[in-house]
Image (spheres, one colour):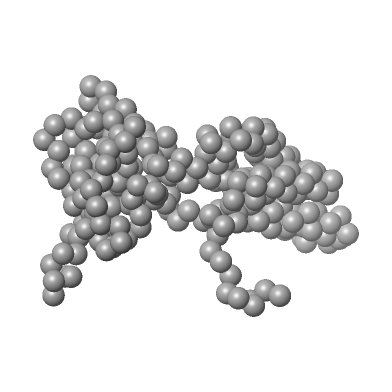
Length: 144
Length: 95
């Protein structure tokens, strides 16, 4: 009863990003991997309908990769991170541009370059404490 | 806002009735979603607005993202934490 009386009447947010605060470069990587595999399948196929679909899917995935890179860049990385890891500005910029290139290209090498750039972003994210700060811990034993 | 304020703290907020001062923790409307309230530390005060920053810059979402907060949207000043028991105490302003 007393606790109910004393309970605060409003809740204020002192922490946490507005949407959810969950960030992981893996999200961009999965889309970039999709691009890579789709390009491979495109090149291996002689079915024109399949090839047309492959291009469509690849462009869609490349756009998603670009979106996820942009979310990391504009929402996750803060001025403090840039100060500590100045390379991140260039990395995000290059990765976003590379995603556009993958959208236009059917060269698996371009998709490979995109994956490598995302991996470099992931390195910075890991160094900045991202895995602990922006992901939820997995259930013990859920992943061997 | 850690270490100043932690999730789950119960805090007494006093109406301001004056301009906020640099260093004190205030309750304010989030300019991006006005029904949402935030609790941040005042970093700077100008004629009509103030800049609010979290205590933990790498993790905080504050005026660096949502911009200056109009003085009219600063609702009060955090003065006292009355729960949890181990953390009861006055909330000091700091610079």
